[in-house]
Amino acid sequence: MSEHIVSVKNISVKLGDQVVLENVSFSVDEPSLILVVGPNGAGKTTLLKVMLGLIKPLKGETQVFGLNPFREGEKVRRLIGYVPQKDKISYETPLRVGEVVLMGTLLRKRFPRSISRSDVENAQKSLAYMGMEDKWKLLFSELSGGQQRRVLIARALSSDPSLLLLDEVFAGLDLESQEKLLDVLKLLKENGRTIIIVEHELDPVIDLADKILVLNRSICVYGEPREVLSEDKLKPIYPCLKTIEKEGRQLIILGDKHA
Image (cartoon, rainbow, N blue to C red; front, side):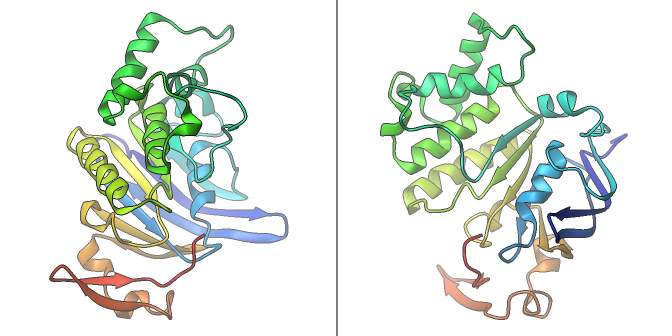
């Protein structure tokens, strides 16, 4: 590739009096799934917001598809689909699923914003991609947690982004919802999307990860799973780490509380 998908060089971020990221550098060079883990307060969500151009570092350089998210934020955000930890959708507002998905399209439009037939078709395709096409007219607030998560990913996909940023989308989901979401991520990978996903544990995303980034204000380890998944490398960051056997394979439990 002529340019990195994501390039982060020596960035440091201070929020209030606290340094939350310090001299962070990494790059994503080809379509892949990057799993970002780290203890509470490690700066994981802040890192995503830097890539989105929502938080400006004290120093360092960030590029997404060769663009600076702070000078060319509008262009960058058209290339990114983002699912935050906590969405600001009001449950008091009776929004239907279709309206929630279309919000992703509206947010990327210039004023005056309006919805076209093509926008509706793309939103319906995104919902179908998530296996939720029959939920278009239902109230968003009446869906299960797993269904809501899939609708929010459909919203992020509605403008056909090249890069997907997901912040703890597996948190609190039951096993069935986790499996459905894993199937979606696998399909997205197969279709050449780049996904950067923040989670507080390795499982259940680990089997799909091309690389793992372990963050604790600075980057502790970044590489392929076979390079990262050793107690020697992870124990200094996760002193409560333990290894268990699950379905015939060794599974590392990081043992950190939810961020």
